[in-house]
Length: 251
Image 1 (cartoon, one colour):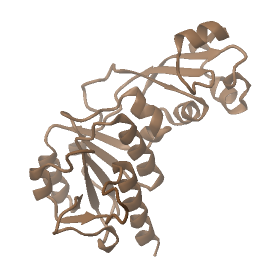
Image 2: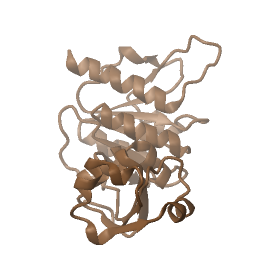
Image 3: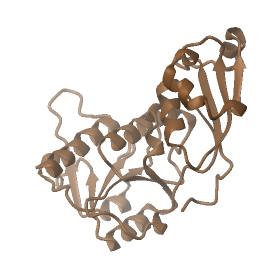
């Protein structure tokens, strides 16, 4: 069930791959317009043409000069889709979770590029959903959607007021909570059992996981650094841990 808020929020996606993903899997969003550059790259793409055959009433064909002026995006590839809808789900409406369900809890991620990459990696690694705090965190912006390369279409994304309460709810459903945090209590990342119902908490780029959220975790884990820069991008951290989980599940 979707949250009532933001039902009319407007978004855009652009580029051939993003738009193919959106047109292939969109079920809940209302397409307002599909802007095409006349004789542009997208118009020459057979997959795009096949997908657009049912949206003839939504297409706005624009000449090259006007398209470039209206959509000043680096990689638009001649197609921009404007749509509205609510992209968020309600965590508390999900009563049953699969035995190997995995959810990412992103505690106050500020950078839309990082969040978009986390979404993309999560989808590729078979994650079921992602929890965002409603406050002091980037939400689903156009930049996030673009970087995710369509991953937002395949994940349950929850925007919740109280992350600690969300963790308590997940625990009541049988989840173990693993926080990624540099601490003397943290186990090495590959020594954690990620099988079963698991929620993985990652913190903001500069501050890490907030204290109350960290105290709600069952385990803490860390990725040891061996270089001179003692810092790993949060999206890279998520990638390492999620594919370690996939390795364990495949054994």
